[in-house]
Image (cartoon, rainbow, N blue to C red; front, side, top):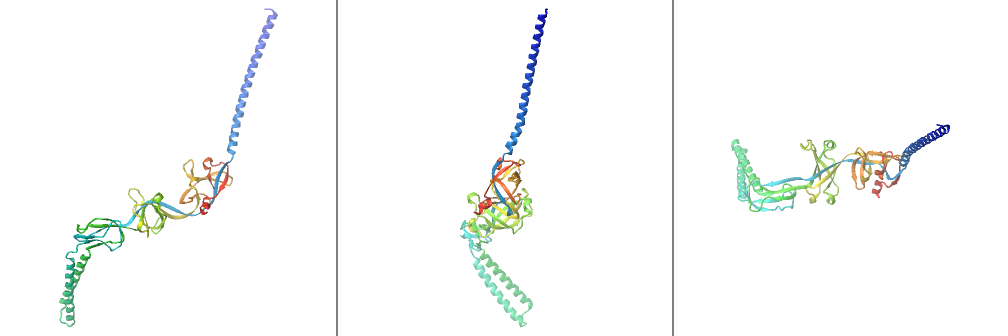
Amino acid sequence: MNEKDANRGRSTVTKSSWVSMAIVVGMGLWLFSGDFTAETADAAEPSQRLDSVSQKVLVQGLQSKAAQRAVEIEVLGKTEANRQVFVRAELSGAITEVNAERGEFIEAGEALCKIAVDNREVRVQEAEAAYQSAMIEYQGALDLSASGLQSKVMLAKLKAAAVQAKSLLQTAKLNLDKTIIRAPFSGFVEDRQVEVGDLVTPGTACASILEISPLLVVGQVSEREVAFLEEGQHVGVRMGQGASMTPKLEGLISFVARTPDAATRSYRVEARLENLGGASRAGLTAKMRIPVSEALAHLISPASLTLNAEGVLGVKTVSEAGMVEFVPVNAVGEDPAGLWVTGLPSEATVITVGHQEVIPGQAVDVELTQSADSARLI
């Protein structure tokens, strides 16, 4: 190989080396520029997220102040008659008259049914005559005894005869009176079991009487609640459901059981409502509210309530620093204007609109609205 060919070979190798080096450097620069871009983008994303979180959300709320409120126990139950009896015959005989009409109000002592008198009036007359005779004999013996002409033994026998005659007279009169079956107390005739002409014996029912004034409201309370109840406590009661629910009525607790129901382990509670007249009925659904203590409570809208991640009921408030806070609450009463709850401080800014869009710790701007308590008073 001559020198010219050798120089040409070295020149070709040198050019190839430079080309290879250029390609390597170019690829390195391309890779480096890609990593730098990715790192820059990754670094920018948290900044963008921080900027979006730091943006304040506008919510609506009210400045609520606590007020003294009765803490109540709510008891669901039903109404029951104060008394219900089947008025029964005490004698045998045929029914001659029935005065009890179903649904009719009847006063205590009024006749429900009448049994045939038969010879009971005659027996009264006979007993009356026997008693008068025995008394005359006894009075004469007393006069003789005062003069010393009558023995004490005979005087005692005549006295015993007079007492016996009086007893027979009273029995005859009582049997005559029992031919009229009377109402033992004022109430409504719920049903009648006999008709004119029926033959009755002692124990046969004539009619059933229902006393619903006063009316009982009966419910069950738990072991925890029964400790707060005692006879004589005031209770508010509403009867019925929906549109048929009655206005609130006032009554008193008349009975608190000392032993629980074997099946439910709950305790029976009875409240007595007075002077309701004939408008009340047994078997109506009833709701009792029994005040047991007092506490500082806030009046809020039920729509302001929310649940946290653990399922705890509460409301979201705004702190003085403008941050959202979740506060657990307990409902202690209802009101036409809202719900009474405890657990909040004496004054709190409660979020009413937008509470579902914010989380605890988030900064917010609050547009204050009229409080539920103020709106109720307008």
